[in-house]
Image (cartoon, rainbow, N blue to C red; front, side, top):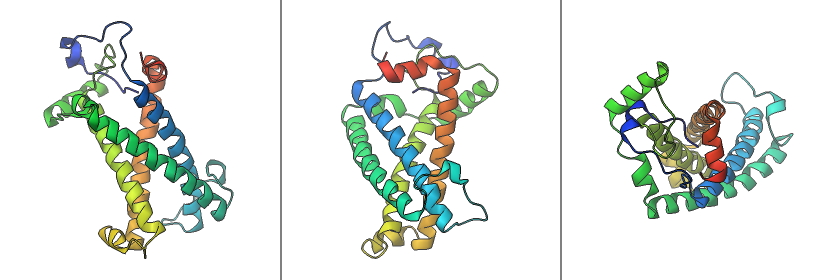
Length: 211
């Protein structure tokens, strides 16, 4: 699902009418990931409420599981779905060259220019097959956050069996904070992603039909 194409991309020929923007494997992993993340976030908030890190709790109406044990069941079920789906996405993204074509290079000057264009309303949405610099940065960032949230989650889940991994995060307590902030980054991306999909409906259509 595209967040928007930059004004500079007018020099890039738009994809031919009817040409596939997102192959089937991208669309399937995208929607499976969306479902898995919604379950993990909702159940994760319920788990957080059982032992909060900060002076606030998430409202029960937006949590999943009803209580700690129920939330853990949902969380672990969605975790395996997320891990398997994520591995498929990463392997195919690398093997097909999609990551190389879509997400690199990222140049700071282009990120600044595209950010300015976004805030001044000069971004265009003609070619959904081409990502602007801000999109590239955000997509790579959320992939990294996904990897961090899985690894830190494993460190929290099995701090004794995976003590080396837990130590990488600075111990059990520190791993909980890393896990929380990775979640916050993903939620922030998710909210922005949904907003842009609503503002540019054809990007949502493209992630459903591929065209």
